Image 1 (tube, one colour):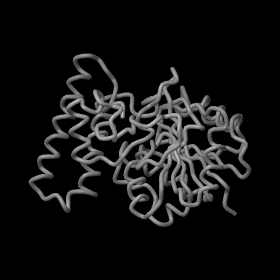
Image 2 (tube, helix red, strand yellow):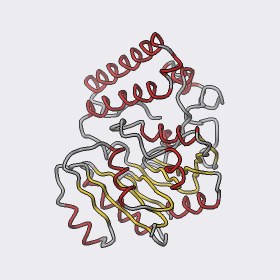
Image 3 (tube, one colour):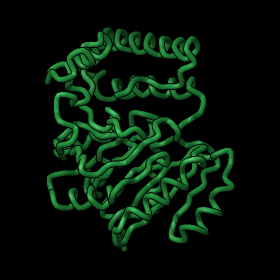
Length: 297
């Protein structure tokens, strides 16, 4: 028998945040037939899991012997616990005010919607831009690289990538939501498949939403539900590793969705640009000691 909702949390050295995430999830979620599973990608310290299983007896735990990547681990959780809907939730998120129940109700009430994302915010309450995105295009990349998207964030043209021209307190359709909180109905996965395991870290959420959109499903940003996200606390602690996967995901996405129609010359130019961005990110990390990856969007 299917669960109504399976929540999949992929953990990797997330012991400082995982218990708070689970506590908020169980406390703030009153959904019948709910299953929560944590898939651990070979964390260095696993001593917390017996504690968590004692505190949350219904919690499912899958322990991988190596780090298989975010997409593969998500798919493991989905395959082990079938449900009518699924939620991918980062372990460094804190669920607020029945966010899961609100999103599930919204998803189930709108049959044309295949994917729902909530308002993902920083600990200070400000919006994390990545929770609502459009599909990357060359023009969008240009606006972001030149700073036009920040200078003219209220412009429908220049602010299109993160929908900064729209009120972030109002629901609206989007091309993609963030994998930190990504809810989808099982029919979407049946139509397009699960997450693409070619993506090790980053990019799999954008790819999944893009494929769903191509199959006719609508993704929605639903800010009446919210989580606090301690950004980048659930990935590798080495910014060099995170930066590599972040920019490599760009190449994978481009090669998968654009390369065939763009031609080899354009592909080389795009990859050269990505390599330059990667090098600049590494230099910024080294000079200024910044551990951020990519951009805020």
